[in-house]
Length: 189
Ligand code: B4P
Picture (cartoon, rainbow, N blue to C red):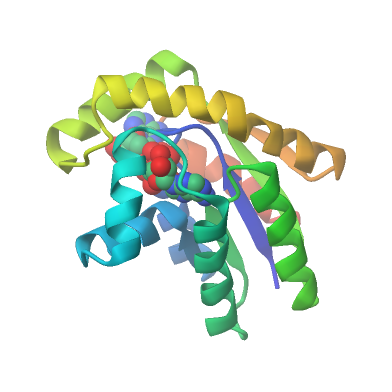
């Protein structure tokens, strides 16, 4: 099993690049953001609670997202591999993911970190907000999301770096160029 973490700040292209890598390699795509938006769309109890947190630009509780990931891992025992998009976002999530994968006799092969300057992130997300209708793609919430990323999520990159599993990838450029950069790393794992 080949398991990849696609890491980066909000708007760095994780979702965009994950979709391409899923088509190219046949990964199972596990996006906690998509899972939460699905819960919101179905107006479940979990979704209603998550919506308030997401619209405030904050992170949903570790227990909720770890539980969602565990369910998806259990449901796909024969997958070629998983691409984790937007997860883990805290050290507690990273540690839980290592434990869950160990139970299945597998592990994270590499964390690919998309590096994008803040001005570019903000511009991309404001632009997406004009069409997406997402409650968290407005300037005030985007700034809060970037602050949450700095405080709670950047330590996750160090977590993988200490395991010698971190690759930094320039996330600025054409979508196809960035895809090539990611593939050149994945092809050597
Ligand atoms: P996510 O859904 O993960 O959203 P995101 O970080 O904003 O990135 P996304 O993948 O959507 O965007 P992308 O960079 O591809 O999280 C949303 C919220 O859910 C979080 O704030 C949090 O509240 C909650 N949440 C999710 N996971 C959680 C977890 N594990 N723990 C706790 N809470 C969690 O693309 C952005 C835009 O850029 C798009 O419009 C795209 O078209 C554009 N773009 C992409 N690549 C480009 C390029 N190369 N050039 C120009 N534009 C580009």
